[in-house]
Length: 115
Length: 116
Image 1: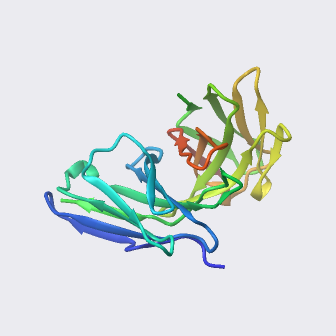
Image 2: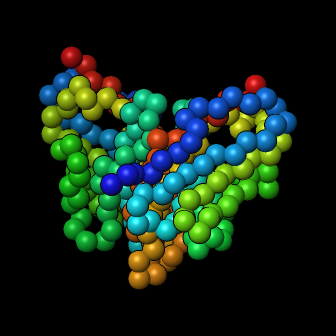
């Protein structure tokens, strides 16, 4: 049973560029959440997708956008990259059962460096 | 709004000694609480979770945590530390677990070091 997978594992971009990160949820899961973890800090919630819609959003600017596909996989897009966007980006998947979201399981993350 | 505070950014214990990582939470509704572990250059692994059943929760790798409502605490313990326990530990709370949309709010983390 494959867990949550993310690609790429590492990425280097320059300021102003755009980046797309990808996440495949754990088998059987239908909800994907994205988190940003800056160095030495705890993860911060970016947004969550369920039924191909953004359900919740954290305090991140519109430069951060996402998408969920019919197969439940998801993308995180960041436009106009800033140096401060350098971080580990974590994807978590879960299942909504009986109207309640169950435990979130995390992927290994994508480490983004903006130069 | 919900939040968690982890007391101590770095804890160091000797191998075989008791591990105690402290976490206090703030929540306006009955919380769902979690402890996650992160090994270097890896993602987060769920150690254990409290979902309003038993107040003493047992997790993986010999860890356990006790939910104390009166103290708004959810401290993580392990009776005997092992070298492999060295990692970053995050306490977390979920804001709306009873709905179809919820996010996890993490503490700032505690780095656990094990002395030989």
